[in-house]
Length: 107
Length: 151
Image 1: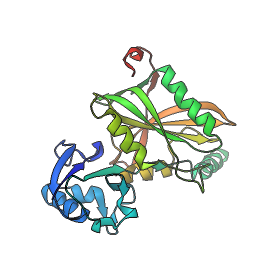
Image 2: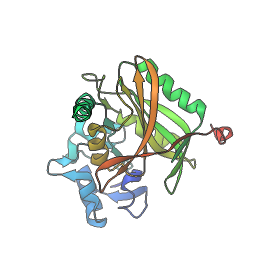
Image 3: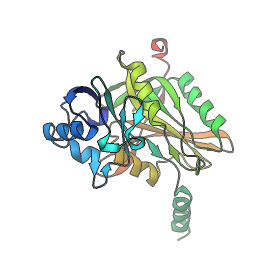
């Protein structure tokens, strides 16, 4: 069955600038493996040894595959897979950095 | 360089001051051309980190999805992320750097705002250099010339 895959801007250099692709597959894993075969560098951006990278989210329609069956999440015709950057951060460690700067300043 | 109209910057600051002492986050939408970004809209996103919201944020992924959909038929797209550092400097932290590298966030502006005792104290914008694995500061310009283009 054919599904639509939405590619986020950070990944588009890998897909030749394409933001939307039509791919056949029965599961999310099928589709992502096909994209890896078709686009060099895709896997490095999306996967690590544990599967989808921590800072990448994959959604099928409105559902995060981490809440479903991950790569084994089943697809039906017309589904949309969205690959999204996971945006996170914060000032963890800022206090330690400030202390380091202060210590350096104090010599 | 990133150009932000004063009214949008005020919207962002209002979000941050209302969220204090927690970190807040959101997306900036506009145009990008050879490293010059112009903001035309901002969208607030939910910080899903409830355990350490005072010094961490995890943006609701649905916010990115909703914002992309909202603007997909326009000439604008997501060009940057904003977040606050309550009672800490507006510099990119190692946590910010690690997360941006993990998501491959090159060519985006990261506007970080220091909120001291509930009031915005400083704002800086940063761009990730992926090969050097660090953020570099870019110019943040308050610019109201494109204000009439806003939705």
